[in-house]
Length: 80
Image (cartoon, rainbow, N blue to C red; front, side, top):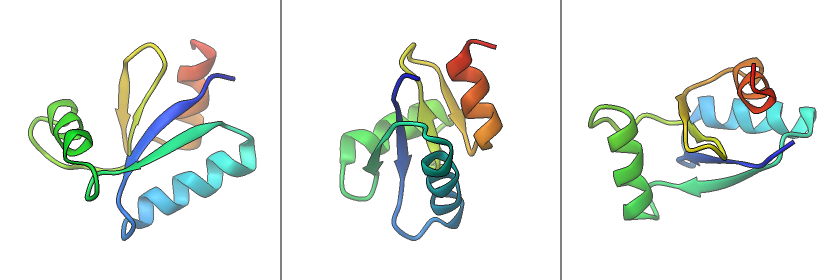
């Protein structure tokens, strides 16, 4: 399975939940804290209509999902 990039913050409960679920399922990801990376924050804002909504997950094909479930992530990676 290809790796995704998950944009998050340290205080986000939804981010922690998704990270845990992806780890248990063996989904490879790179985490980027938007509070530490201004360019990442801009990307998240672009994807989410000006909002810094996390978790935002970006897939290898460049598509993105905001606050997805594990099933959503797995389906997108499988090309479903």
